[in-house]
Length: 448
Image (cartoon, rainbow, N blue to C red; front, top):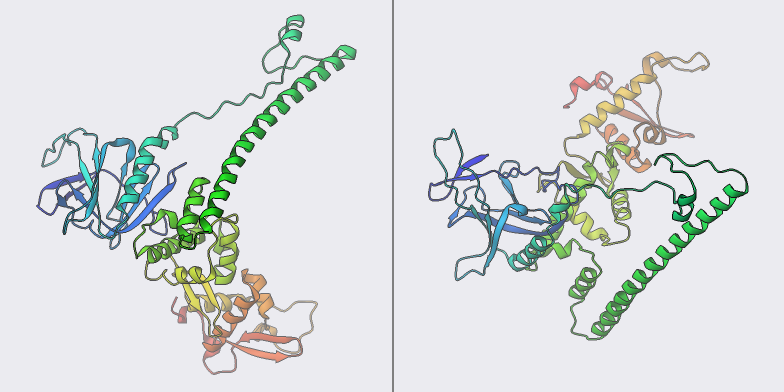
């Protein structure tokens, strides 16, 4: 329970804790879907502003209306459960007053053991939209309140019938058996019974198939009509292609990211910031383990390919938008960062991972080679100097790509931690025993 004061000094209570993802977006509940996002939004309680909740994002989902603050997202973020909303209204704004969407919650019990006793009147929370998007927010809110998807949250699963099909005619001639037991069939009668069951089952399957085919044909008619309307409107030179695509996607039941955003001039920047958060969530998802599988670092091009592949061919992201979104990670304080090597290669890694940590990782690995193998006859003191490694070996050891491994070894060479040997076998990297003082470089001497 959060107890705050509004701009007039009155106490206000908000018992709407909101869990955020690693990308500082609302963590969705099971079967909850995101419907709309708008930036530059503030919160009111009644007629008064709530301090600390005046510049943030409004996230509307199928279950909740959420506010995530820009400055203090972990502290000043709240959610209102739509199932608790009794009434919702739209205020179009007037002169300097911004447009607002009002949500009236059910009255709750008064608080006990508090210095103040709060009234049981319904709590009215207003979302103040200062950069547009209020009309779309309100329309999506009306749809969510009509569909009431939260009623399915605790619904029991659909029962499954695993019992074998049995004929009523046969059941009248055969003794009854327990539900989990199958009567034993032998001889010609058993074969006839099995054949009858197979034919009945085939009839059921074929009947269901024809029902599905009819449903598919009905859907096909809608798709064909949509395609014809699309072609007809596309012939008009004045048509807005983006609006047409949005209409088509909505008619087919697909809600795209751009369709979730406001329609004002800042929608492109809002789209990029939401895309940036989406990619950051994708990278830090422990279940997917994208960065972990790549040794904690991967090229931006590889990430772009993997990200688009998981979208199933729907709403693919262009390389230009993807790079712009990645460059926003630092601005949005997200847990991943974009790094550029001297040859221009862009890579992605965790925000807290540094070059010194990579150097320490490489040195720890190279120190494992200070052991003489009984089957090898080396011309140098292996116990003292170890041996050199190639970029391919480093890639295999840490799970990097060859390009990333080469760049990381060159970075360690620039720092003086390793030196290279160029020979007929290619380039190998050794611990640096050539420059005085470098051979003493340890993890303790690095800033990690």
